[in-house]
Image (cartoon, rainbow, N blue to C red; front, side, top):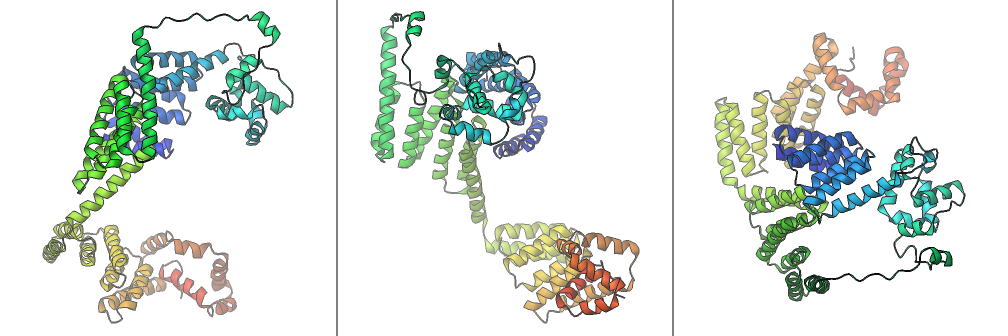
Length: 576
């Protein structure tokens, strides 16, 4: 149950339904309060809604349950950053890196936290809100920044985009970013003035392609004389390791090129060579697994994926890489699947991959595998002969008035042959005897979906609607069935009973309680609602009460009279 709730939460999170995700993760936590992943996922959901205090509480619980898990510290740092506590965020990221020094998410988070801490140190607006925050509101701000050659490069920098989005959400947060030279440059653009920022600061904000290096001025040269860098001593072992890594990267690039050309044997050789040169990068293994998948060597692909996961755990590799390896393993299992049961290891792999990293492509593969498994199960279970036997058993129990047992056998017959209209029809009759009208109505509709000419389906559906006191709907159902089987006595009898009940209502021969119940049900009908909300029909009804001459004219209009008859049949209007 906890895994099911977790899966629902993950799906809601992927669809950006964060409130829904929180609900499912909370349910999962009540079922399994010791699972650190659940708190981590709920923390991410809270953070997505900017509920950073709640996100912080869950992140702390995650770290408490799993102190050596890097992602917990990543959640903790993100929550602190959201609360504006940059130093606490940096401390959280640093603690996580002690356990997983190669974790890119933690490194990136630490850089953001340190940058935020440095910006908040000496802001002239640190003690209050910025008067300039409101200038950043509106979509035209993005257009101005994009069209100005001095600022358009900022939009390629994720940290600046995050700053701008934060200021637009919360104008008072401008005080945290006022020391950032990019923000000052944009402020000058919006104010229409030239705010000076140092060249050194601005160059630090650009990639090389956005802002080319500028020659040092004489003044700069006087104050900052060139110094000859001192060579660092590197051991032979370190130098050799560095050279091997460089060679491994070249082999990987050669493997990628061969893969694109569909030269799979050559690609395998290059990735294998890269792995021999450097076993600290699991991308060489996952890439080779991808080649094996294309070659149809599925067992080799699965073995490589297992190696990648095992080695990735040892190296504390990024969760995305681990998730990718497990997803690829699931894809290999899908290729190997010959029957419904063969999809189980694939589904297990995809679910496991999603716990590492929530990749939409992995979720899509999981849904496809589950759908394929279900279809195969139906195909493998299909047996019309056994279906007929179960239907006959159901008929025997129905005659003995043992309706629950009858339902059981009709259900088995439907599983064996999902297109058997008789099984649906008979189960609808059993549900009717048990008073389970919604279930019976669903089966009757299924009959007519499979075979719209099946007259028994109309009689079943009409009978259920009659018992539900929806006489107008039942009458319509019987009338439709009569088109396919004009002499059907069961349908004719059903129509007669409906007309009697409708006439009773018109004569006032039913209790006020029954009339009120019928009208309440009718008011839930979208067709009835549409008629009553039509201004023309409201005027027609008024004329029938107050203006006999106009009412007489209305009776000559077949469309209006059809709607009046529908209201009469539903018990909304009475003709006396």
